[in-house]
Image (cartoon, rainbow, N blue to C red):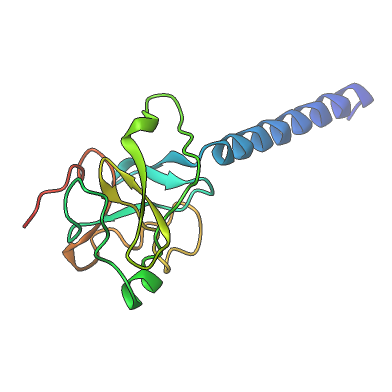
Length: 147
């Protein structure tokens, strides 16, 4: 292989690494973002790519959580002090409320948001449909239907 070919390969590799770094930085740029799954389509994730869920037992639209104690250990409340969202979202759809335990929690259109303790890496969706009550926020499952 010629020196010219090796330099071209090196430049290509550096360019690809730089692109990956920019993509990773963009994901962390927002407190709420979108991820995509072949089955679920696009759904909400936090700034590190972990899936955000809503709990169908929460009261619709008022931002009040009914998940406390052991429930909130399994389903940690999501909180972002300052909401930043990618194009296509409205920051006004996100609000923060004080939970009964005194901690803050972010809600989307009045629905408190949670992560799932068994999601161990970004884009895991292990909590989807859990007990028929926990769901990702996407076009299929949101807005929720109350049983």
